[in-house]
Amino acid sequence: MSLRFPKDFKLGFSESGFQFEMGLPGSEDPNSDWWVWVHDVENIMSGLVSGDFPEDGPAYWHLYKEDHDRAEKLGMDAARLCVEWSRIFPKATFDVKVDVEETKEGIVNVNIEEKHLKELDEHADKKSVEHYREIFSDWKNRDKTLLVNLYHWPLPLWIHHPIKLRMGGFKEKKGWLDKQIVVEFAKYAAYIAWKFDDLVDMWSTMNEPNVVYVTGYLQIQQGFPPAFLSLPAALSAMKNLIEAHARAYDAIKTFSSKPVGLIYSVVCFEPLSPEDKIAAEAMAEDYMYRFLDPITTGKFLGIIVREDLKNRLDWLGVNYYSRMVVKRTSEKLRKKGIQYNILPGYGMACAPNSKSLAGRPTSDFGWELYPEGLEKILLTLNEKYKVPMMITENGIADSKDTLRARYIVSHLYRVHTVMRRGVKILGYLHWALTDNYEWSSGFKMRFGLYHVNYENKKRYLRPSALVFKTIAEEKTIPDELTHLTTI
Image (cartoon, rainbow, N blue to C red; front, side):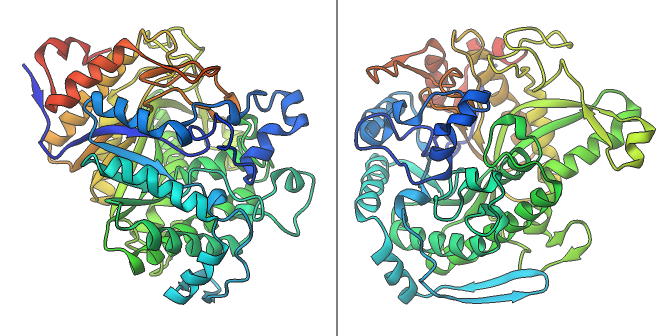
């Protein structure tokens, strides 16, 4: 039996700036922390980053029209695109002074007026502003839905220099460890809303802020800047990211009536056994809810209620790839406050291109196919926050394209299932339309519906793209594809 989605359900693609834009001369953006990070000799020699460079990437900055043609041919009607802060403001904006209200709890208000935006306009790189307008207009002129995200990890070098910070330079350019970034991010957000609101249907302040503070300051083996191991630093970065989202939300709302959301990394945390349930719940709390609770209920760290953070979420973007299976730690470790361990062999802790301990296939990244987790997490998020959601990333590193068709269909089936239970899901945006630069892993992980030859930038359709096309054109999983709904 065919499974039909509503006519207004969006099916499209997601992209970031740093991972897709560069690739041809004139597209380089050397003014961000991630640029410096992946070019750093010590990072490359140590294996912390791949040694691949983003300036050799898929070249969306130049080839956006052709990629939009490809998306349209696949029946896509929505795109989540990104603006790079470092392109718009390659030089510091500190001297544009705005009124800031700060209490002992943090920065509770940033008052940005049109006069400030006119000042910021004098600082902005006009060529980049105009080029983003051309990109967004090309998509909108096709009568498509446009979501614009303001931050997908790179920061301007004038506010974060990760190499200097790692070497002990804590006086300036500290990125998310400096509360001033809350003010600067709000100014940037207001400016982008002022410049592009006529083209944008939905706004997102940032993508996966939980990944930023977890990988940057705790799981430093992931190769994300600044790779500075410190729990206090992680908590400080988390607090500043939460405030930055709230102040950016307020800033956008000053100049836009469009819905403002947040795109978030979610994982289905499952206990290995009933005795591990508390451990799994603790990990979910640490990874997901410590950030989402403040911007919805206002409850910060489960204790303080901050009205300036409360109700700053019109919609939630859900980025889901797989699960993690959790086991509680020993009694000695629990006494130290370490409550959980991630169990190897399941979820995102598997060997690449293998079978998980549950007998499920894994991706080139070693991520287990577990679509049930998407259904479970959507139901949980709906119960907790009761805001409309959109799947803003879902995809698989699968260079041979042997698993992608089943991955797409099985996850869309789970989305359809929760929608039948009354959960408001606005759409599904696949990661990704084309192969891309996968951060510290470089180019070896291929997520695209189109294969990219990075030497000549040519795109080649993968067979799984035709499965996506079949679903997108009719907003239906047809009966002949329903055998792909299970793993």
